[in-house]
Image (cartoon, rainbow, N blue to C red):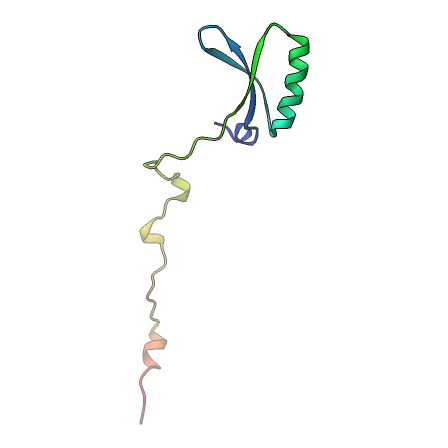
Length: 94
């Protein structure tokens, strides 16, 4: 599903024989879809239409991360960093 389709989740579908359907148009809000459906029903009274909410599919649980977002362990910063100057200055001199 494209980004544009995710923004426009409300669809008007035309119902066809043998349980087929065709998406006529997509809308951001249900009220926009209802208003457009009124117009379609006036223009095509014999056709059957329905308003459908088509949410974006959730990500698959075993999906691989995008290569650009993968973490390379050799490039990750170390949690323990000790510089030579820090080692020399830690001792107490009496």
